[in-house]
Length: 204
Image 1 (cartoon, rainbow, N blue to C red):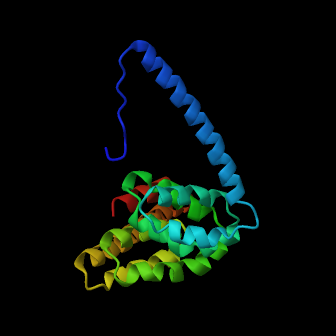
Image 2 (image 1 turned 180 degrees about the vertical axis):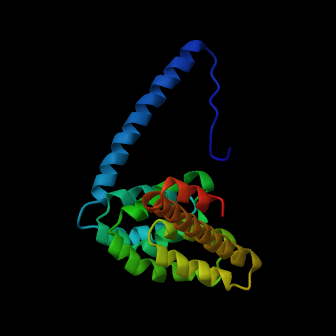
């Protein structure tokens, strides 16, 4: 692994000595990191300017920037919504989507609803099917009309895979709606029909 040094020791004592030294250094680094984080989050630092660049890096800087988001005020985080969505669509794997998704969902709902389409637009102009699916998954948890618009846009795409992503979401939504209507009809029959009428209805 690049940049990682495997330690080799001559004796059991040297293993122990190195372990205790590294543990001390690890703890000291943790304390220093916490203090630096507190200083960075101080009110007199322009967090947005630094994080706007950091969130677009697929490195340890990008991962650190994502963690720092949790310490920002909502109004600062909303300014970074384009960069957050960029990192969400480009740098996260299927296994670690929950953290950035939960962060966006934790922001004021009305503000996210107002800003997210504009923030997503640069990603959608030449977006891949994977990027569309990421945003469709996120939109689904924000607002139904928002999801509908994006799915219909995907469906109109000249890219077959993007179009398929939109069709999948529209089909799922239609299936869910049909299931809800069917369930409601069954409930009404249970409420208003006699047992004999209910049996006759089921046999139709």
